[in-house]
Image 1 (cartoon, rainbow over the protein chains, first blue to last red):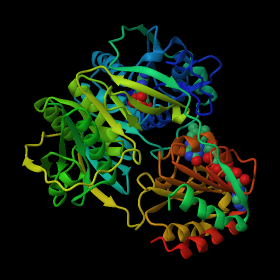
Image 2: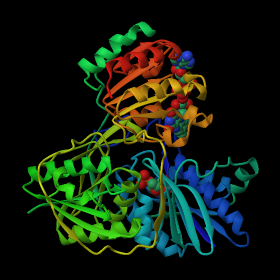
Image 3: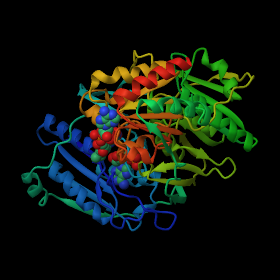
Image 4: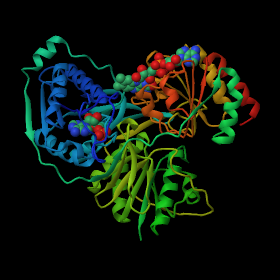
Length: 252
Length: 316
Ligand SMILES: Cc1cc2nc3c(=O)[nH]c(=O)nc-3n(C[C@H](O)[C@H](O)[C@H](O)COP(=O)(O)OP(=O)(O)OC[C@H]3O[C@@H](n4cnc5c(N)ncnc54)[C@H](O)[C@@H]3O)c2cc1C
Ligand SMILES: Nc1ncnc2c1ncn2[C@@H]1O[C@H](COP(=O)(O)O)[C@@H](O)[C@H]1O
């Protein structure tokens, strides 16, 4: 069984985001981490491999700058067998569809895959798109934002939380998934895993970027919120709050 | 003539709230571009079909398969977009909508803009928060069709006297299917959809105090309950109520944060709310920097007083 997991290097959620030239994030001094949702994807891939036993393998793939080696080593330390780093000279300008195009081409060449895992969202551009798009390009069904997964008899059954409801989905294998918090508890890399990761194969491939499908015309800090005010202290402030909500803000 | 294709979600024969906004936004774009709004429903919308004209549709296409299929719905949308030479494909940035946008873009060989909070009708430049709201991007789709999903509570709903022509079309088959949809039993709206939210954090002290928030939610029409991650991780509240980076992104008119410190990952999920109220006993809590109105105080005192005051106003 061949399992593929897509991971991305992203700024830590606590990192201050500065804009460099009105168009891109300035990476200077920013701490980068493995995308939190991709941890769920990696964990699920590893569990499926362990359940399958035998010669099942987990391959991790990323498109990113050379520094993304660090995140791939983390994934290898967690237990993946091999990693592929697709690099190019201009990570900052990549949009979801161009990313999906490159990733799908590479996945296709190296396939076929039995199971494919993505995070539901990369917490940089917050696009929620690469997983379903890559799956579409590979001609695979994709169950997205899943919080439960069962695989049996050539079929995947998964659950996801939608607005005000819970949905159960089914698809035949091979199948792709995008992973939401709640699916599992990602493991930490053990010391042994970290040592082993150093000897695992990490292939680096230089790729050409397709033309961008989304052009960024401006990147800016969020507009400042209109200054707020403390209406008072304790229960005594409540009547003034309600008055302000009704008469000033008009939200009640 | 320019076609704006609005891909809509229905449940139990009713148009979902976020899709009402999608139709409203489609109407705005169509009016600015002398175009028309074609609405596409990929599930039997029942009674909803006929009413879509009133929400802004000129024409309604019903491609109802028996069960929702993500890949099937995307293929149907892509086919209709080609057939109608759509200039824009709009959908809601809901779980289902987010699932479809990348697929439709892939099938149409174009780009997409996800979770948009605004659009310029002339230039079709889309505004979208990125990095969990720590920056805002303006983007233009370069491909032949602009696919975009819209964040809830940012686009006006249109109500007008109009009938739309309803046509049945064939749905495309898909490999994946939704086999069951279990609606939550709660009478309250989902936090991701609600126009008003009251959320509790660790400062609430424990799950036994949630009745304080529930009483307020009962007094305010359409108010949903939300929670911080600390509270969800502690098992006080279900993950479906979590607001933030690893929870839901909400953008209500009113967001009340009670006993929530305002960590950056929490802000990521709610900082595009129109009015933010913070109730916290620590005057230095970061949430106050983002609040429109703040009360420094103990939730155990402030919330009962707030409930009483709201009940007096008789808002229901
Ligand atoms: C990758 C990542 C993702 C994350 N995702 C999310 C997310 O999606 N959502 C999220 O919320 N967090 C998220 N977090 C966690 C976040 O960093 C905070 O830990 C969390 O938001 C804190 O929750 P809290 O405000 O309820 O608790 P605390 O930070 O403990 O704050 C409690 C607040 O209550 C106040 N208080 C205490 N008692 C009272 C009282 N009696 N009356 C009034 N006020 C009182 C205190 O002054 C304090 O400000 C994430 C973290 C990481 C690293
Ligand atoms: N550059 C990338 N390299 C590898 N995987 C990616 C990349 N960008 C996105 N992904 C995958 O797609 C998911 C969704 O990303 P996005 O659509 O950007 O929110 C991520 O959680 C990853 O699993």
